[in-house]
Amino acid sequence: MLKPYSNLLLGISLSLAVAYSPQSYAGKDDFSKTIEIASQQSFLDRIAKKSIYKGNVLITQGTLVLKADEMEIDAGAGQDKEVFIATGSPAEYSQMQENGKLVRATANKIEYHRQTRTLSLEGNAEVEQNSSSVKGNSIVFNMELEQIMAQGQDQNSGRVITILQPESKNTKNQTSPEQDQQP
Image (tube, rainbow, N blue to C red):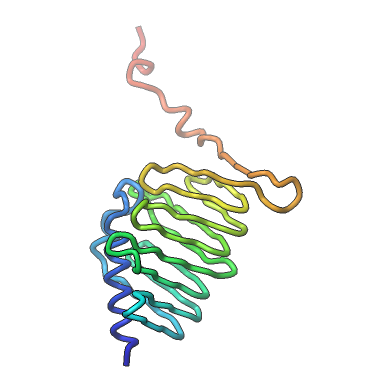
């Protein structure tokens, strides 16, 4: 009986959270699209202001896709301060940017903090953007400022691994109009 209501509450909460994300980060069209939440179980506690979704959780809104084994939404701190917690092996987040490039994030635990507009990734964390990636044990990604802060991996050397892809040859070989003119 509570399942349709809890899905509506999560939809409204997620819609508000995504709508306040910076539009330079993700596709503007996503924020006007319908949110769909699929899971095998859902639970809503209106007094504690928490909802939990379990079992092959899939949330979509336009190009935004979040996959997890479990998703918890904590709205106890009040409006505009919700925390979305996705856990999985791994949990996955992806969204298309305005420039057509895909941003992906994976980790054992992904928290979206609506008030600070940050993704906190813990356990086998990775953020991929524009063919480059950052891997570490934990990563904080500020979506508004497009800043990444990573902590070392527990494996091997304990270092953060950053992979930067070179510019494509097409971008480097383009000439300016002044260079095309012959004296």
